[in-house]
Length: 233
Image (cartoon, rainbow, N blue to C red; front, side, top):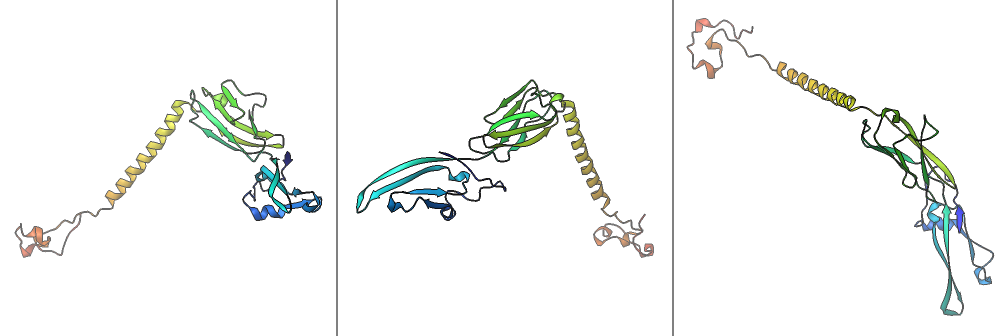
């Protein structure tokens, strides 16, 4: 038995099958008391997590030793959630790249890719997997640059996402990498020069008598040579 789920404007499932208290608030008996021979229930505000197998057990008091049961499978139809689009691989001319698209829903969504600037068809060298949601771009070329739209759809509705790629040549990619390395080297050299310039220049003494004791002991000291202290040039 298939039933439609109630739309969730927030795009989230706030309840799940383990939320017994929340489910209990949405379940009610219909058609009178079970003792009258009717044991129908109503599950309100269906959500995707209500999917599952439901069983009804019946016994005939005072004979509780035996019972009968009935089983029904409930399938809740849910529109696709907002998909997520990603680009995997280096978008360099001549190489391959894969675009992925993922969404959830019941029935499982079917995926369709289109180029936003070329709505009629995909270009040669593009292989679409409508079940997995991937788009393989082989032997990349500059015309493949642009924005791609993925549409996830089932009988309940559809949702889309987009991803943009830019195909570059090997020389362009190398130039970018070289520029980045050049900037890093320049920053290292500037930092090194800054450290060197921060060191104070050694003092020049007019007399051995003005030198620190360690050095003056190796040189003759004439007190008449003393002027006033270290002289810096």
